[in-house]
Length: 67
Image (cartoon, rainbow, N blue to C red; front, side, top):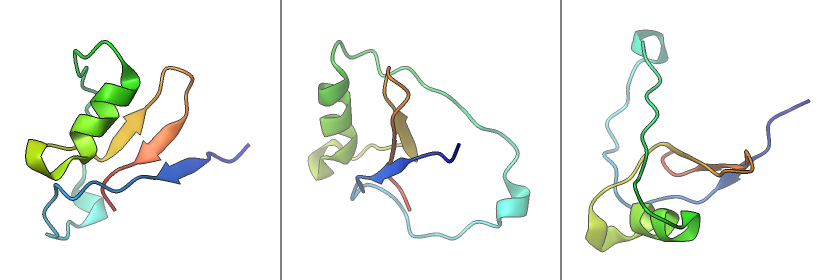
């Protein structure tokens, strides 16, 4: 079964390229927000100046926020 990833790009990221071989960790964060939609809005709103690479919904759906 292949993962289905939705593209929902955030404007809040640096275009600095990283060598994939140097990536050592995958960090999960809890947003602390009551609703998933509110958390996603915050992560994709330019005024918030925050984002993450992926957003994982409670149902397992995955959104890619940073290319």
